[in-house]
Image (cartoon, rainbow, N blue to C red):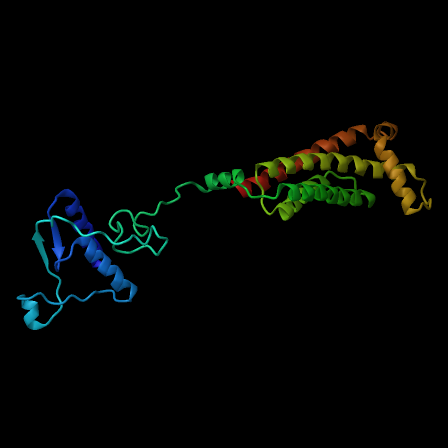
Length: 269
C-alpha cells in the first residue's frame, strides 16, 4: 500500500533527528497503530477528519496533513507489542519498516543437497523398528532369491532384490532414513547378499546331488539344503562350482552397489 513507503521514510527521518513529524497531530507510531486497527476491521484506507481552518474542512473532504514540530518533551508510551504476546504480526506498526515478518523473513538459502544432508543428520527415524524391518527385508529378499534358484535359475540378479527389500522395509518400519539407517541398510544388505548367494548355490547343489525322479518330502528337501548350506565349500569343489560361486558373489555385490548408489543419490542429492 502507498502508506508503507511513507512510513518507511518517516521512520528513517525520526531516527536521524530529535524533531519528528506528525500526521494529523499523531506520531508515526500512533499513525501506524491506527492503520493496523483499520486493517483489522477491513478498512484499507482510514478516514481522517478535516483539520480546522483547512481547505478540506470547507469542502468536507477527508484529507491527511503533515506538519513539522518539535518533539514533545515526554513521548507517549508505546502500546503493547502483540507480536511479543504471541498475537498476529502487524502490517504497519511494530518495526513494520525494517524488521517485521512481512518485510524481512529470513530465507533458507541452502541448496537442495544441503537441506537433504541436514535432514539425514537430523532424522527422526525409529531406529529399533527400522532395524527389525531391515532384518525382515533381508530375509524376504534372500527367500525370493532362493526361490528363483529353486526354479533352476542360478543368477546374481537376486542381489539387487535383497538390497531393495532391506531398504524399502527399513523405510516402512522406521518412517525415515538417517545416518544410522544408511549404515544398517548397507550392513544388512551385504549380509543378506552373502547368505542369499550361498543359499542359492546350496539349492543348486541339492538339485545336482538328488537323483533324477527321486521323490523327497518338502521337509526332507529343506533339511538337505540346510546341510549343504553349512558345508557348501566341500560341495563346490566336488561339483566344480567354486569359480562360478565367486563370480556370482562379485557381480551380485557390484550390482547391489549400483542399486544403492542410485537409491541414496536420488534421496539425498
